[in-house]
Image (cartoon, rainbow, N blue to C red; front, side, top):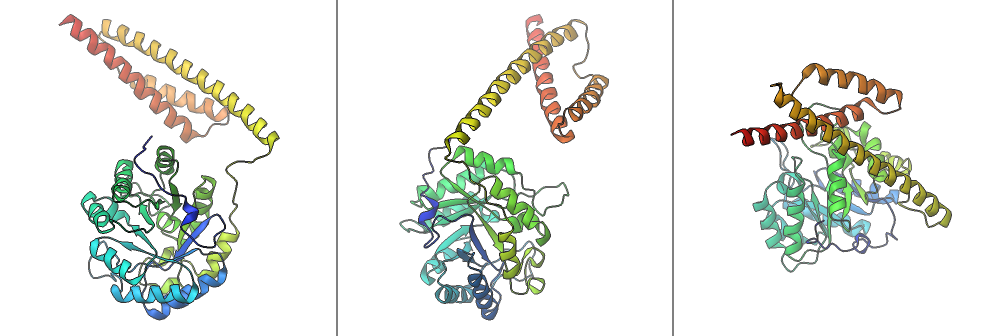
Length: 370
């Protein structure tokens, strides 16, 4: 577990939240005009559900010629929205100049975008610009699924003296086409939380989904995984937005979305609940022990198979046998209530380890013979 990152409690950052959950950061993808920014902010503040206003001021685009943000002028609009609504404001920074301008204008919270997190040089430049500054910084996961890059960015900022840190899970690029703009890969966010338990993690369902229709599903999933809050893009006229129109929602739709979410507690203080949960977890622990013992026994048999194959000059991979295992075990799993995807993934892992065990046996035999 990483010990280098020492973030402060999330609830210290935001005034008047009363430990509410989920903490909600919302606002347009881009600050386009002063009117658009202020009107969106007013409507979001009126919902009573938003803790922080956000807006993109500098927008890195995949290709030139698209709207790349209002720039410094937009910072003035964002701060005016802050003054009028009383809500703290946040924006993305990608270099030292962005940091300096935000600090000069009075932006309350910064975030490092996915395209920046992927570059340690850029993250270090931002960290250097924040030396001696007491400001919350949120770090989005890198575009590619690399948890070490994600943690590395957090560490660089922490070493610069930033302790008000949080992560934002916005999904990862993937060659595989699916329903989402960016694959959620929830296991990476869970891994980050496991390695840095004190770190608050927000979810950005707007960028995961790429389309507003899927946002409620992803937002609920994030809350069920005990994420600290959500960053959802909102615009007074989403379909006319100058960037990422499909993934933005109106303030009214956002309020309805939040009302529809179920916020579950990570635990219950009731003694009877704890006793029941303890008993059930003990059963899981016992079953996990049995599973590990069975897997160990299976690999010992694989080792014997490796020796036998070597003695009889037989290849490790037997395609027909593997196809038989897949067919019969998936059918068995389905009959027992296990999903096909889970059973297939589990079998692939076991098969991979079995081949690895047999390869070690054969190589060891070859070395002794030589």
